[in-house]
Image 1 (cartoon, rainbow, N blue to C red):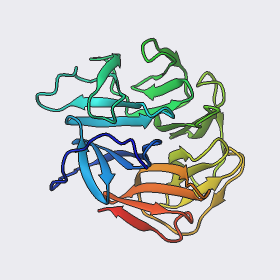
Image 2: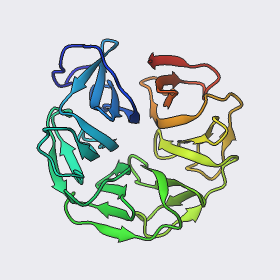
Image 3: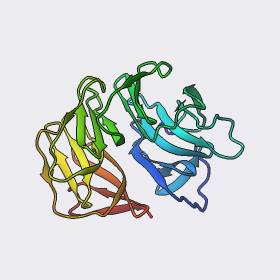
Image 4: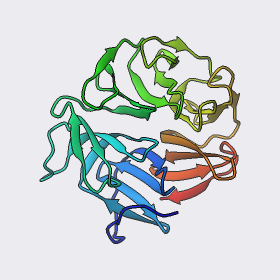
Length: 257
């Protein structure tokens, strides 16, 4: 696949924390949003992309736009906190879209035409500039938007919540174990990492779930995708390693360690 931006040459890395993990929808390359900024895996090697920003929240839109939030590194000309920032060049450069100096979105997701974030309040925007605040039963650790329908999942201390109206109202789902993190592979396939370190999957947007028996460990970041041949690929950060599974944890492959 082509179209990825030019990355800096591979160099020794000291990544202390990975906040988010996903794939670039255009290139398919692995992306890591970390305390030290954004990294992409190119030909098996991690390469730094762009300035040092503590990317507490990170998401990629279906058009390839990157969205992030967090804190600028020393000498980086961005407000503290950065608010909502966007990149259209693969993370090489970032612009403040809104809420600079106001918001640090630890939970952030990009759905069809809407960005949703939590900075102490649940907020949504359709133009990256003006925001609407919505009630939610409990603060979310993680929010995830289905790629086409935009159905939201939120993992909270009150349970796994879902919204089909952009966060205006919420209902509680009943996974087999409490959910820590959530992700969508497509509009009907959802994945959660549970408190026991196992994965649970749903093929009906969260109405019913399959709890898979093998523990992958305490999951720090999670994403899910469909491969070109239709397999469900789950990516997870466990013990600061990036692992990949296509059988819901029965076997795993280490991509970054």
